[in-house]
Image (tube, rainbow, N blue to C red; front, top):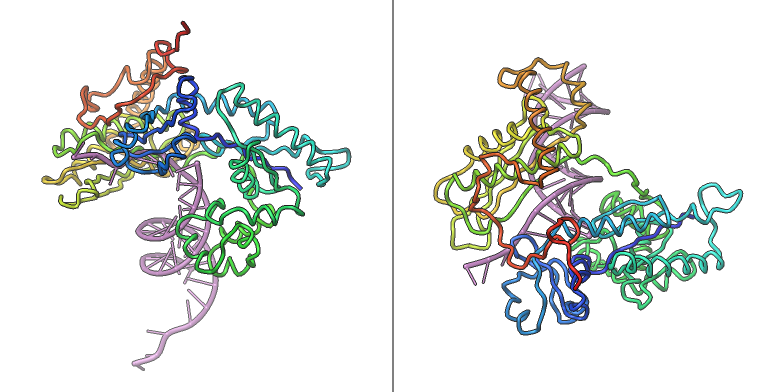
Length: 442
DNA sequence: TCTGGGGTCCTAGGACCC
DNA sequence: TCTGGGGTCCTAGGACCC
């Protein structure tokens, strides 16, 4: 048996905001999505008040004011840095960690409990369970003490069971639950709603409910082969994992991304092509920077425009177009140039645009792409000399921005006072990532 | 007035090839 | 008039996750 743990930060974004406002400790706090659109995080107090996940802010605005709810715009620099601190803390207990999302990590604790003669798996015993409970207590106490972020911890022999244990742990006072003991597992899985099982989304929930399945325990008893025939290999693995059979491995090395997308809603609707172009140039520039950070190049670019789908009184138009680069690239000017060219081709007069998206597709490692390039004849506009010049230029730009602050140097096409700027009325300072914002103690 | 953003994986079906 | 079979690759769409 393997020992898989899942550590999950409670109400992560809201908890991050609370760390720097001790006075908010017992107050309801909600964090809004980009553009102050929807509620994406709620402190326990806010949940208790009945604020639903994903609810549009304007629908609860008055309620929030009347109930003394703290409202925050999202501040991803802060959350990213706090996440990093939590993940660093985890390495105290094991180096075998898969960072699954900004607020969750899988831990492989098997290595800590291997006895002489055991190679890669351990045998379950009461003593082991005791030791693990002790370790879990240490984790659940240490992470908040070191970072200010409260966490819940679940243990299981598979990732899916660790996730399930974590869901149960969240409701417990000690924030811990173990599903390692096969003897007790069934009873615990009966208490877990099938909707809370990892891999059961809205659609599967409807279908499973129709089949009469209500709990995680019910799902675990379905025949895996039947599952495969009627659904797919994904759901088959889901059932097997719930039965304690490992199908999903921990991915400790982050896999290179295959696509990069940058998409934002605008602060207001845009009708002119000029204004829209500034948004596209900015998104293209951000995407290009991400490519360079990952040392990858993209093979193609897709641009999509969206009108406001909630304004049914207005004409709707959602065009998209994909064009390949002559050769895979991560050069900002080249990507901006293609993004604008596509934008001009799909833009139509007479529509009010609310959102745009760029997708950098089929990304591959820079050096691999470089080795392959000799197979192709250089195209006319972008010859090797120009590529090399732009590569040096981007290196210089990135260096300056790293030293002087992101966005110090930018391309004119991005505009100086962009009309698309999202609304962020309640944004908190970057307490941990900007010198000017470091809190002072009085 | 105001409604988020960024990912992955799998399957079915068509195109194409021999 | 009659018209096979098997494989691969690509894409769109649908499901999921946080």
